[in-house]
Image 1 (cartoon, helix red, strand yellow):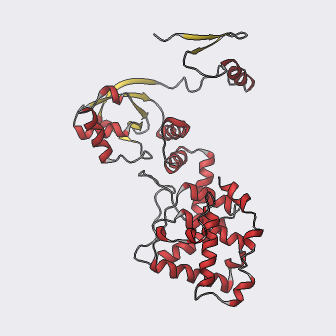
Image 2 (image 1 turned 135 degrees about the vertical axis):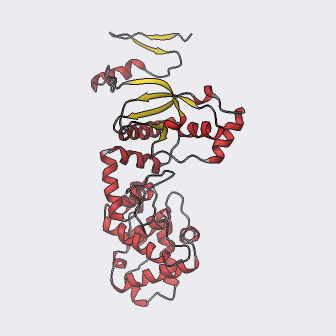
Image 3 (image 1 turned 90 degrees about the vertical axis):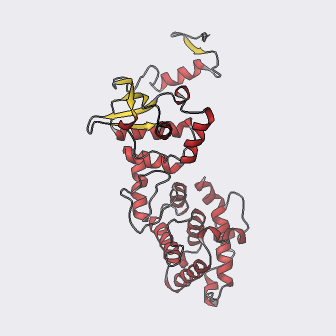
Length: 338
């Protein structure tokens, strides 16, 4: 039986388990100053533990997709469905539609279903809405239980109505892209037709690199989409490196956003797209492949190749000046993206 380590403090006495490492007294004082010490949240939520028929359990739609090979490998590891290894699934019972939503344990649910046994699973059931369950799923994963992608965390945060996530959702709407990750739920929802997917990091870093200029982000998105949507590959996704690199290029050379120079830049991107998939574009390599400066590398490589292309005109030289890269505060831009 685990013993308790007693830390001598002023009243009240702080007790922590023997594996605790740190200053428990100082931590408690910090919580007291913030008026958090002794505060308990959500202790009024009805919760129970029951065995629920697997056919009554529904994955929360913002959950990760369950990989079939992962499911099979886990069943093979221990020679079947191991009840002790599975533990209890976390389930939200939403009274509005009388449904049991699994918000932590969909992989284990899939194991039981593929294995065709057991027919019931042990569940820790909270009487909360599915939106609230989505919030706590995203929060728990984001705070270290396991490494989930930023896309999955974002989708769940939006689904739950988390205010900051809704701000990014609105920006995503204006950008004309969607974020989905390995889920069945996309933001915006329903998934818009004829719009490309983008990674969460590209959205956030693009906003910082553009200095919050959504019109610049949308223009770069449109330029990439226009180029690759005309190819056999299409443009199902906006690549992060190209997106951030072209935003940086446009920040350094704002003249490239309009008139004849913009038309030539678009034609150059179109020409590149006809012979190269997004993932194979080598602008970053040409730009020096600078460590931790992906956007600047892509921007510099794009500029150098554009200058060597048949679309380059001598009149562009007054705007596309190499020394502008030296004048541009690259360190500030890159720090914003970290």
